[in-house]
Image (cartoon, rainbow, N blue to C red; front, side, top):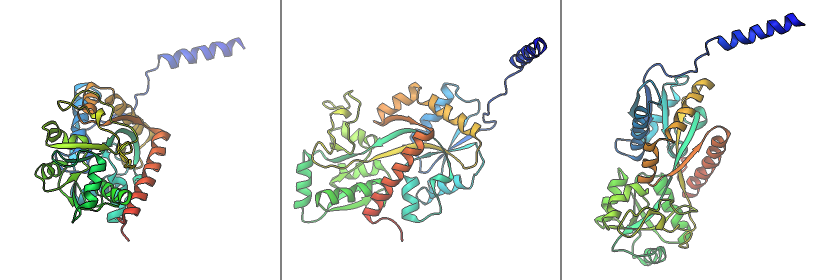
Length: 328
């Protein structure tokens, strides 16, 4: 018995003194894949992450932003699908992962990829021109009374802005003519120029024209107000914008910002990126970006992320079906 104890103690001491097995980490540059063009919200977020990782020494290898917005983002989705087992590519995803396969019937399902983490949520705002109606009730009344459908600017046919527009029609009985533009910035310019009556841009996309007093924020499509209380205009913070439900328009929609690896990577590779992006959400760069862009901070991974994705997929599928945007 004494010999067994001595042998066990010797083995324990040997294991304690042995060098630890290094956890997996990239050995070459990591490609952060953006399913959109230059300058858009996904590109901006990818570059914020790139800067945060580099500045805070969160990874030894550099991160390179790769824009693959061709075919309305299908290029990026199919690129990730074809990269099975490659841990050096990570997709920054949004609701495109649900909507595009439905509307364009491309052979892609987000379940073919490896979920890493949800890192933020986008809120949407109903905007009109500063010279237009001052409240949601006035806006809806004006849209109903108009001799022709109100023009609603947006950033993509059969996508988030278009779906929200159809949802508003169903809830209010008002009619809108949806006009897709190349970017939220262009949609904002068209609103300022009175070429459209409204848009449902993300907060950041209308930030400068709101600050300049050229547009009005009527309501936010969420169950709660935007959290940031610092004044953005001379008189208003993001938190001062009422929810659409408060204003009698019961419509909510949030868009995920999430990170995915290709399919068939190892658990150790997945764990590395979970840890990496959790560290990113703790950096000053991330926190500053969240407030400046009026994004909703969140961090979900593992089973919590999978539950969120399944519920979000079901919601987006329901909205796309109601809007008649699902390809036959």
